[in-house]
Image (cartoon, rainbow, N blue to C red):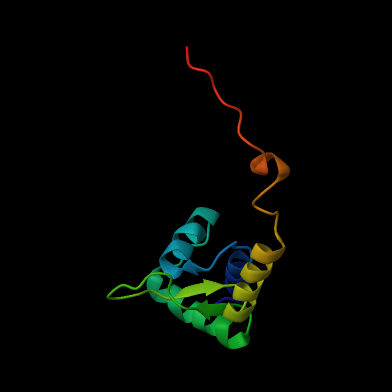
Length: 107
């Protein structure tokens, strides 16, 4: 496979916000102008995973025939980032949330 296509594929996967199934990546690549069918996409992804540029993730849904999911970070780093963002993110309760609500009058 052409190295330029592999580079575009790797940069597309690294730019994703969440782990994504191969089918969705194929659709996104077609929209970006890279034409790869599913038969060509799987070996290209496996090649990039073997190089360590992208990573396979566990499937997001338990189905009879789950597809492979890929992402630009290893699963452990992805989970660690999720946990840290939830712990250090904006608190759910603010001073406005804790105060007594205004009673609304009915007409």
